Image (cartoon, rainbow over all chains, first blue to last red; front, side, top):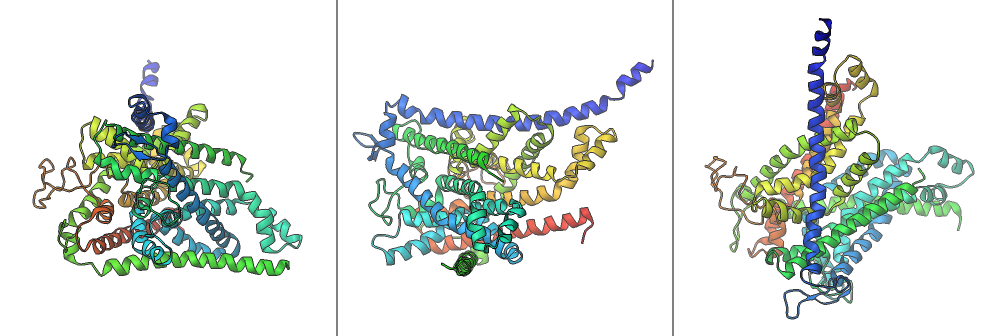
Length: 300
Length: 295
């Protein structure tokens, strides 16, 4: 008799427990399905260029002429790849030192003022939508470059400058976190030996936080690499490798935005654009891999 | 060089760079506001855009942005909360959990244009949603899920261990403990993060170009039946959001006042994001005080 009550009592609990398990399980399942289907669908479309249209992958990666709609159709995507890499790496070269300085300022030099003013500024910079950056780049940076340098003002320099402001928050935030997590004994030891603040930062702090700083920079490059509209607005969108920093060119993302809406699904041109998207996706994997590797090397 | 001199020079450079960053934001905001607010009027905020003539407004775009934000958050919050709770409470440490973590990391670093293309392929074409608000909201959900998962995990981690253990010790089920003890404590962190994520949705454009579309049908703001094709509430209609509109006006705008429209719309976007930021800060601080009874 006593047994039946024993069995019945835990039941609401177990039912409740299952509600939680099933609900969270479904959510995580949807997440996993979304990622896998994304990779699968983009890859299956992107590979059609090579399988269905018979384009040699090497031609896509190294060809210099892009004219998939023409006769003969040319699928050289190297100008886009070059454009993407040059703008994002240049942007990281500009934003990296700036982000490092901002992080040092916030943690080492003036923590009170830094946390109160610089941190909100960085957060706001991160929140400004990318199209707004593109618009400001188009109406301020491009005319400025047009006046100072030969050419139309559009091109890699303008794109890199816009992107550098966009990725500055990413780099700064990660560098700040790394700096703040540094054991204080490390710095105190250096100061006790009579080192100045700069000597401590340069010889002790920088080498220790280098993996974290590089993580931030790689994440910044990844963001710049995938940024579409801001770059598209200031880069000019000519499908060739430019001879100067101030000449119209294209990136992978700008080529996709430019033509995806104007091509018919399933045509060779359209498939080629999906191949560009596939390159973008594969580069994302590479960036995540590099970040993981750097995090593994982190000494903090 | 003298070590002390080097120290002074380096400090001066670092301070100068930090000052430059603050000036950069001030200049950016000032430029957008000065150019944009001059174009502000009730008419600009409510009237539909013009394609060729000057004087077009951003009314439907503004409505679309807000409606899309609501739709996206309606889908993202329950999904992200559930997935975050799973990752933080139910997932057992091991290879599978590490793998999910990797997946979330990968998803969070996917370029938004790739998410948009995925939406075009799967939601717009395969599921036959067409260019629609719903397709846009689903694409943005995919885009925002990793962030939401991370926010939830962070929030649940901030809950003191003793509080969770006390709940379990009272004989509550794990789900009940999470729902009625841990989530209320975690709410300030989750809410702050969610508002910031909402700001991101409001400004996103690349993922929407090929999902929510680049055009808006003539909306009839007196028709509130969600099934009617001209109703603003119909989730199956194409909808151009504010961010997409800025891009379109700049890229292919024919109106003579395209630059002013873009400036005005940018000012609206930036003001909204500022508002979201301030709201998140204020709300986070307010709830923290309320829940912890600190001053």
